[in-house]
Image (cartoon, rainbow, N blue to C red; front, side, top):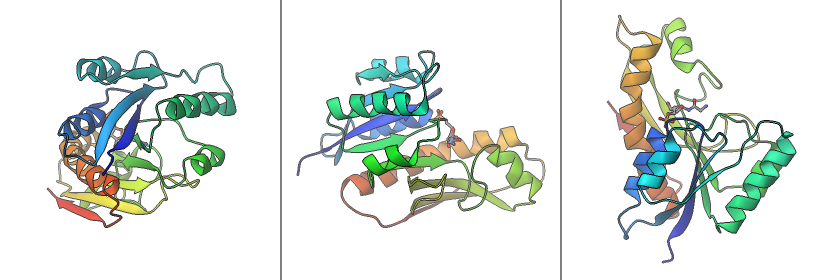
Length: 198
Ligand code: GAR
């Protein structure tokens, strides 16, 4: 079967992106990393992607309307003949029009157990809510923020002395296991859910 062409969109350090790219290095993987795209030239993940031999692109959002920015992103994705778009620490909300264009082909990783704590500051909000567990979710992206069908979740305990920083640091290695596992299944055509426990 032809491997799915995967683009990864980042805004920052790109640690999830690195794990996704590494997971696709095996030629038996149903996906192939063909592009890493950042919305900022200073995104730390860009040099990591280059070191991994993946083509990179920057489409800056600054100074553009959402429509202009997204039209440019779409053009770059289309030129690379992308089949699947993985958002990995990509901190721009995508419009309904963009999501419609890439319908059923966009995944996102979010640092909470959705549908809890959509949006930002997820770790602090989990602490404030008195949660005994916390986690991350990979889901399909739809026009509603952080609300598309869930494809996998990773769960870990919250400790008495946890802070937003310790939660984030403990969650990241779980995200690094979860996202590649979900992507491998998704690229192979499965929509079954992955459950991981710390
Ligand atoms: C990850 O924790 C990811 O879940 C989160 O940003 C971090 C990115 O880390 N994503 C969001 O908050 C999306 N709204 P990374 O750049 O090192 O992969």
